[in-house]
Each structure stands twice: as structure tokens, then as C-alpha cells.
Length: 274
Image 1 (cartoon, rainbow, N blue to C red):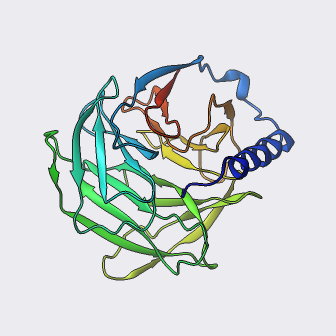
Image 2 (cartoon, one colour; image 1 turned 90 degrees about the horizontal axis):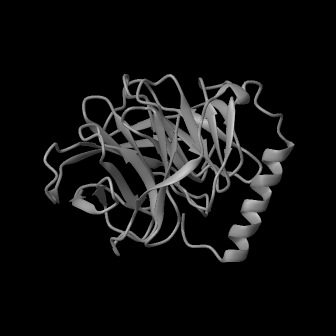
């Protein structure tokens, strides 16, 4: 998300909170044994100024991948268990209009969503796929870009999900009055425009999303809350109030925890354990 005045962010957060409070409570919320949120990492790398996207490594259990919002180059950072930068990977052939989210896919792939559109004018958006390197040594990586188009005009979006087994891509749009989940074709074609399909509604102002490693659940986050689901098109079974504003969210590699990013430089990454 491009930088916005604090008053505008406060207004968005207020609208999001109001919409959440007006929604019916999840029917089975009390049955989910989530414990309190705690700080898991501290991001200290001055190059990470706004961790817009976050996802788990498909190799290392304690490593997570993050990337900056618009204004940076096409690169991502591998962070250790403490939050220290282990490696920086650049994608020379990948576009970077407005990267907003990251996801882990099958066969050790990582995905990045160039899907931001604050002015709502882009005729197409892009997702970038890269093979995750097992060796955490900073370098350039080859990548493949896929072009997507909404069926109903331009939208701003900040959330990307990829099914961990099939690799199917989902985009969640961001809107103050409520967004939608769009599904990409089963097989994406490079060099062609892949048409998205609207498949479900979503809460207002979604800024991040992720499937669990087994694909049975997914999570959507806003500035103030995280919503947990057992399937696309179903109602949230759990709503979690978040401690501070931010945009990124992602399951741990084990699926037994959720990592939650904060906004700005030198910020903590929070963790919710089951």
C-alpha cells in the first residue's frame, strides 16, 4: 500500500472495526484453542521499511520471507528465527508496480503479488513465481510472471493466497465496504492474460492472506483483525483482534502458528500459537 496520511489510516481502521462489529459472531469461535499473541521476531534490517508481504519458507522451519511495499525493487528477504536478515534475493526480470503480498506454493515455489492499485486503473495485475533456493545466499533468481485480469474491472488488492498442493492462485480485493475473493484458472499461462473468477466475499480492507500448509484453512487480515476460515465461501469461524496496524500475515511451516507483520521499519513480527 502506498504511504497514506495517519488520519486516513485511522479512518480506514475505524471503518474496518465498525464493519467487523456489525457482522455476526463466528458460530464456533469458542472451540478454537488459540492462545495469546506474543512477539516472535524483531525486524532490524533498515532496508525493510514496510513488510507488506510475508510467507513461510518451504525448506527451513524457522525462516520466513518478507518483501517491501511499493517503492522498492523486485526483491525479498529471508529472515531468521530472531528476525535477522539471512539473505536477500533479487528478481531482475520481475515487474514491480506495487508488490503487496507473498505466498508459498507446491514444489518449493514462492509467489509474489504485484496486485496493488490504489488509483484503481490497472487493466491487468501480475503474480510472480520463483523457485525457492535451498541455500540462503544472497543472489539473483530467475522468475516467471503471469498476467491476470478481473472479470468486472479494476480493483485494488493487497492479499494473495496459493493453494499449497495444487498451486491455484487466489486474489482478495481491498475495499472499505467489503472485498471479494477471486480465483485464477487452474493452469496459468505465461504470455497470455489469465481471467480471474469471483468466488466469495471478504471483509472490508483485507491487507493479507494465506492458506495453511495442508490447505484446509486460510486466514485473512485487516488493519485490526484476523479472520480464520475452513473453506472459501464459508463464514469465518474465528476472529482475532490484532495488537497494532500492519498488512502481512502467514501460517508457519508447521501450520500450528500464524505470523503477523507490523507496519514501518524496525518492527516486531507477532505469532499466535495454537
